[in-house]
Length: 433
View (cartoon, rainbow, N blue to C red):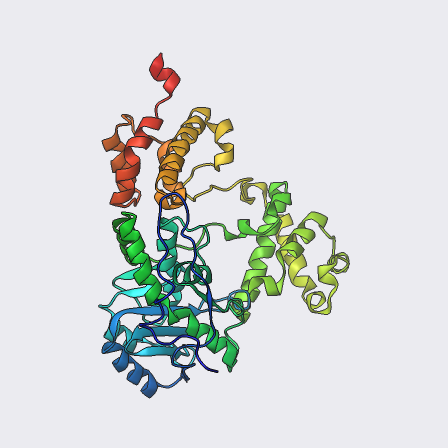
């Protein structure tokens, strides 16, 4: 297939870069479909010799390096990478099979000092780190889009809005653990990094024009410096439909079935939802079958595959039934894992703190609107809640700033929010009195 893109230096000509204002998202230029990588679809690298060769080529390339990774979310239990895409000016695009080559440290050695460009970096960095790939500096095009006020920040939409090219969107949810990978999937994967550096360049200009470049640089540095994520506390509470479990005993049954499913999924490297849907867990918990015969009468469990494992699920339900009351899970979980109640419970737990949170949020929403960005990018919501729940005894801007810095807020966030938060903490009625 003939490429529709002339070359990487010409791709931005003609379409131009949309003007940026603080009032609205830029208007996209005319969209040109991007159907084929400019150099064609490269062969997938599966051996050490070819990996060493591409590493040397990357070392002599120019400018930032674009990275992307494809996982098999929804198909596999693990979040490992099943394809890694890398592109640099002067080098072209490389597609690497990390199943055949689980150690990519030779790439790390050649480009560790170069800026890496990723889209939604926090999603890909963990699986890249498993392969020995860790940036020292990066540019996150999704985060840049959020800071600039783009309402839709998926890669395809960003490339379309900023550069005027339309990317294929058909294979993002594919099972990338498939081998061999079909050629259309490889073309899609190569196109994901085709214009990533050009997108970075255009967004850098927009950030500078909007006086937000320093905001972005601080955010990118924080991503690089962030420690590995801690496992989520009580992940079973994210079971879809769990709100229908009204008692602590039912919550224990959800937890027990979730743990049984997780054990099977982990051992077989299958996405948990493919072992047993969340809806089936909730259905079993609410119907409380007395034995396996009753369980397999429920719709999802009536199929041959789940009929064979009926005793596993009945064992999980029996385990929850046998728990003493003292070992049952609490009726509610902390919203942020820091001991605070969920915000919708603040009014009954501490009405004064609830009123504080309302005032603080109003002030932060006004700042976010003024700077055309989501409030969650202006300041982390969990940090906002901690300050509102346990404010400093003297709510001065300096004391609030100290709390924000201790909670991980970046300097630009502290500068924009500390004074407003400090002003919102005291009760206006009490101050007037």
